[in-house]
Length: 210
Ligand code: ATP
Ligand code: ZN
Image (cartoon, rainbow, N blue to C red):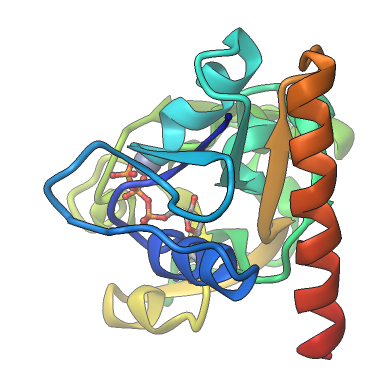
């Protein structure tokens, strides 16, 4: 039996479950359960917080998982990637208050930036020779400028409407993300074979939806 970790509830959950279903794999789903065994394929589904998924897969608690690249790369575990899945597309962007006279990334030198993705932001700034003070906060990043906590933010954007409603202007794209399938690199052969069967079905689903 192969164990897959997916997000319990959030922006990855529904499409992760849909992908498994589209692979012809059946299971009984209850939002109250933390795991479920599929009925017609040797797969067990674990429902976790997305941030915990790369670590659990790296440690072998789960064999494979579905997570956003933003979280995966932030946690330094990009090498676990086996397949890009094409859903939950979003970007990590820098934004400043609408009225700010921002012209280029150099304007962020010495500024305070709030984010939940300090490593991705640091890499972006470093590559451009910018030194800023990065403040790591875990949620509600978009209100940081209006309460005087930061001069700019670096946060996940899909349509941009959250930024606009908080009086912010998107100025730089830091990272582009989509959902990816990840796997523990040292799966025993039996599990590796199940993963290959699953990947075969995922590829068929991807071809059919193109
Ligand atoms: P958890 O409770 O599991 O920690 P969370 O609040 O951290 O959940 P979500 O907001 O559900 O996470 O986002 C999960 C992932 O979905 C993000 O890491 C990102 O890859 C992707 N995502 C985030 N926002 C969007 C969006 N607006 N549109 C599409 N995908 C998004
Ligand atoms: Zn999370």
